[in-house]
Image (cartoon, rainbow, N blue to C red; front, side, top):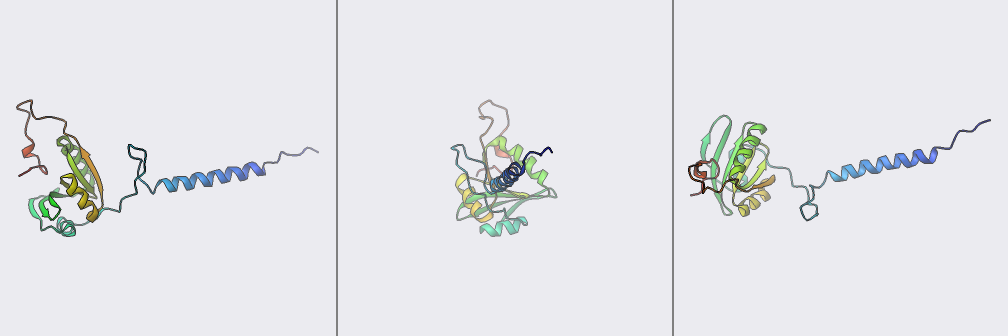
Length: 161
């Protein structure tokens, strides 16, 4: 009578490996990708949601609305932390398109669900403590010394006065 090979140990080891792989995947979802120095950052708190006025109130700002359109609303804000521009969007796509264009001008952006706050890095960091979100930064892609190439002064969300 022929006997079949004993596979019980292989199956138990394979099942354990699958469980371990699943746990590692779940654990990987609780941290953000490693920084350039190789360290992990804790996952940020979920970003605040709400209207332009509700978000501004969470930061202690009485918003000075500059743009009130169907696709976006934008206000200048001043708090104890400094000045920034807060913009809300009708869609996630509108937000992403705006940020992709704005990044050509450099700057620091605090990004939430259908909103962005633009300001100096220290102001953006302070706002993140109140609103959550993700900080995105960009370097300008042009130096402004090529002449006739346009001006950053007219770019919405980056006007400095």
